[in-house]
Image (cartoon, rainbow, N blue to C red):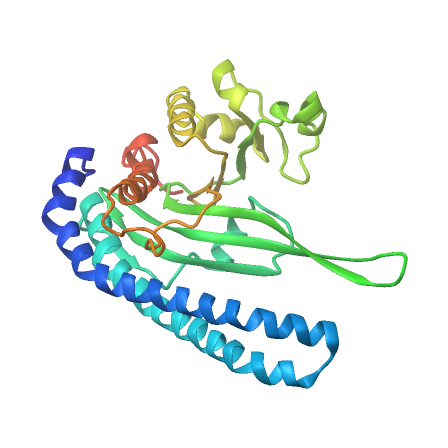
Length: 324
């Protein structure tokens, strides 16, 4: 399975990506010029609108409106052209990065893991009021079928203040990369591996660890390093220990340390579900700085390799378990 290295990335960048990015650079600069033109028109309209609000004289609206309309048009055109530029960037650049990980992987920039699959994982039980995503990668690595994409799950909260005014707040439940792989075993129970609550502020995390919230009981395991990072819940204690072998626990510790971010995992319905928290939009083109820079592409490649590498990191191709 060709999980290629940083040296391969450098070679790909020089031979394949740099020429494409060089061709895209005039389009990026034209896009940026359109944005700043919109800003200029908006600033030109500001004095007229300020005087309108201060004096109430309609004559200032007549002076400001043309600049305001021109600004809106420029921003609209910027938005339209940005969509086209982004699509071209993803098809020409991100697709190459995915192929560098493994040519057997397919890349679908406008698709994402579905809400039904996300719910099936049972990792985040909050109400889903807004569910978005993109950049789906799927395929077979070795003997393992996998899928992953960016996802953003939000929950809506509405409150009313003392004056009867309704306020709306959107809470991000999960933002990052969501991964699903075939674990080649039909689980009788459900096993959940969640970030250790002992790291919570004021040290109250251990108290809340005892509350499984319907995920079974805490599974005690004999790996202190693992238990510093994770808490395990399971509906079947014996099966949870069978799944989380000493080797797998060690691999999960190494993966968590390599990721440097919160990781939630569940083993349900013969699948492994993994949620990697990433508080940024990945795989998007640069607009306000040169697209020729390799640093941001190197970061994108690192995330792709990190997530696709779960198959190797967790040794998922080792088929010691058959479906029952």
